[in-house]
Amino acid sequence: MIVTCPECKTRYGVDAAAIGPSGRTVRCSRCSYSWVQRQPDNLPPPEPSTIPPRLEGSRRARPPGTNLPTLSRNKKSKAPAILWTLVILVLAGMVTGAILKREMIMERVPATILAYETLGLVLPPGAGFSIENQRIRAVQKNGKRAVRIEGDIVNNSGKAAKVPKMLGVIEDNSKRVLKRWRFNPPLPKLLNKERAKFATEVVPPKGSVNYTITFDQRR
Image 1: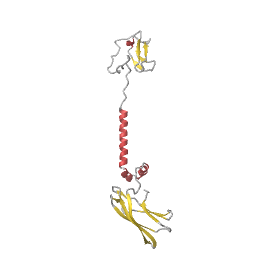
Image 2 (image 1 turned 30 degrees about the vertical axis):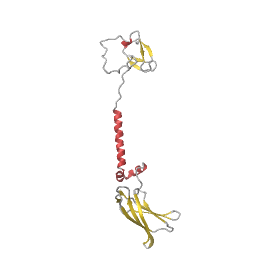
Image 3 (image 1 turned 45 degrees about the vertical axis):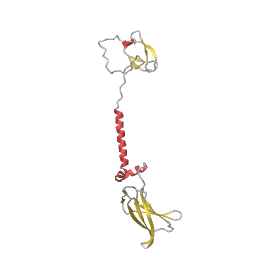
Image 4 (image 1 turned 120 degrees about the horizontal axis):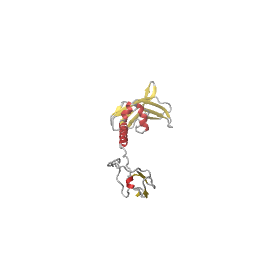
């Protein structure tokens, strides 16, 4: 029979014969509440030949401080937790691989560049490179007065790297941009500490004062 604590509603499985026809005082192991438990009125008489044997392990041991055995509980399966752990490990491995191999991925799938840039995993073009020994001199280009800007590109990134396109900017005295132009670097790739000389010619607009060579930030 099922016995329910009137105070905390904890349920117990109890042999009706142990209660006895006159009832028995029992105590809840959860809240320590005591009450007189009686057999139900419609309880059929026991038939020893039909009573199944008590299976070993079918109920948990009686908790200390009580005379009621608690109902057995089904053990929860560990399979879902193991499955979720495996899923998390696989996803973590994929994310780590995508980060470590991002340069190869961006080269083969250019559409991923924006996603990497949004996550802050991509350095701006020209990072690790420097422009040194920049020189400017006047030349003639197609019969017009022009300027030739020369210098060195140095790879300080610590590894072989692709050289991005270069950008020339001309400003007037008030830092207003008068002209921009883009040109290819002398070599597409430089080894670590390697340098390459670049040169570009441009016809400057009127009022040109400041000449700057840098790396094009567009991809």
